[in-house]
Length: 278
Image (tube, rainbow, N blue to C red; front, side, top):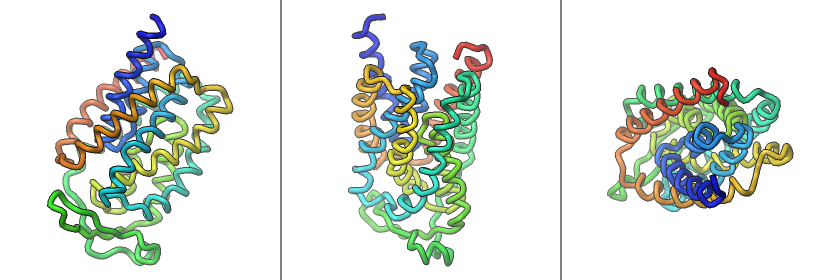
């Protein structure tokens, strides 16, 4: 394969990854890693380093639009970022010494969990009152609906969400994903934040979490500019396109669509990890 063909494949694949990552709040790593390892035969540690760079691009491209629209809960995101950053550094250190087949199987299992969890979500949460801790930290908020009307919401289970965010950060550093699934679980399921706010706040947080673990991969030499550059460009444009679609989309339909895509990718990664192809 020539360098030009490899670059074109990466640009197209990265655009799709950015689009999916922005719409689902799960980050582009779920597409980038299978594309590099299974499709192009790249070592999984280099794929993780590239995926982390793509997560930063995804977050940068989509987060700005969501913040401008007033959907992202900035205060909540910054508070929970303390836990994800600590977890990301720990996960990255473990990943650099773990075998590729183990990471591939764990990656697949993580995606299956994300897919099943997405299917189990049925109702939006709109708490009228926040817990005492959430009130003290001012983690409640409001966002505009499609008609511009402000929808107010509260939050609860602050420390439960904080603990889940630590796990989300560790999985991000270990697997090179944005860990959006775990972050959305922390905010949507545990803290009862509305789904749209959860996904957009997750997008806002993913870039900061990925930067923490990217430093470790950079020191180990697992980030290659020839792979990262086309990936960053493709993911950036994909995430900007996705952010414009999300503002006019139905969250329930998005969950079903992306859960099917994620499940197929997960089964593929587990098979290749068990058979030693990764």
